[in-house]
Structures are given as C-alpha cells and as structure tokens.
Length: 152
Image (cartoon, rainbow, N blue to C red):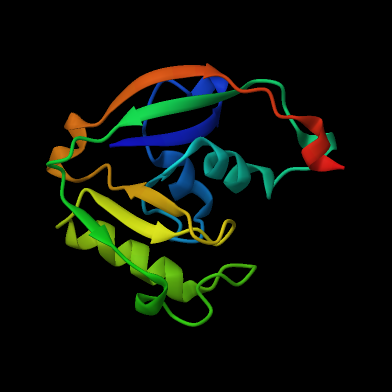
C-alpha cells in the first residue's frame, strides 16, 4: 500500500519519527516516536493545512509517497474503538495513550486510525521501532505548492 506525508523539504528524505516525539501530537506523547502519514494526498494536505495560516505557509513543502509492504502487520481502529473525545481540539490525552500503547507493545508496524480532520479518511501511523520498519521505503518526494485559496 502507499501512504503520503507532507513535509518541509529538509525533512522529506527520511522517516525518523523524531519530530512527533519533540512536541507530542494527537496520537503520541512527548518522547514517543511515531511517523504520521495519510492514506491519500488530499488528507496529507488537510492534516498539515489545519495547523497553518497564509502568513505561516512556507513554499518548501514536499509530498512524500511511501511504500508500506502488504506483509507489515497493521492494526485498524474504527471510531467505535476510540474514546468519545478522540477528535476534540485540542487533542485529549486519551488518544495519546492509544498511540503510546501501540508503540510500546511493538506488535504492529502500522496503526490505521480515522482522521480527525477529514471524516471517512484514515491516517496511517508508522512505528519506527517495529522490526519491519526497515521494509518501509520512500518512493518519491516532490514539490507540493499549496493552493493559497485554502487559506482565505
């Protein structure tokens, strides 16, 4: 399967997971490495765009196409598996607990979870500590100019 990640150019050639660990995010606490990807390009854009304004928009975004082999173990969570506040803003600690457990247990290489931004789409969270992580590869990394109309 393919996954997509929108990154600044300086980070678009590696999949470290360290960025998420610095500040924490919806699905991981500070100190827990995780790589956030999306199941399609539009979702990757939406997940980044919700954190930007036209004033903070940089021109160096890249869209990464990432290959995740079908034999990598995947845990899929649906909305019914999540706490009622899973998509609240700011994100609750309950969702970080879910992601932290996913990484700590190290049973699965990928966690598929609903997007809080785009109903019906899924994000793919990659565990960089999983033994199968080395099978995941960046296929392409291309310039991604945002359409400024999104930020009106």
